[in-house]
Image (tube, rainbow, N blue to C red; front, side, top):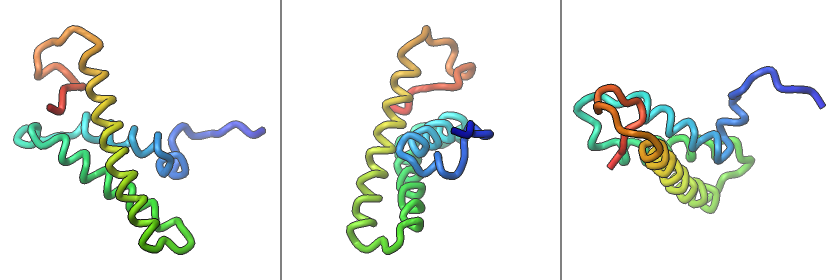
Length: 105
């Protein structure tokens, strides 16, 4: 078996774990100051965009394919929010400005 040469590829992005990690890292790492209270909604929108963009790889997506993509978008957002909750609860909280991982709620 050939070992992969890259850690994160386009193929891994369109897996459930890859999409959840992508949403989590993007939302945790990039949020303008005025948008912090909207993190969970931005995460949901990004999860839906990433999930729906994955349907373009289906031979014939159809209505069922899009419905499943929207449902997966909700699960991806919930997973990313759950990862954020776990990351913020596992260590002592320093000043808010010094934290990379912060609560989205």
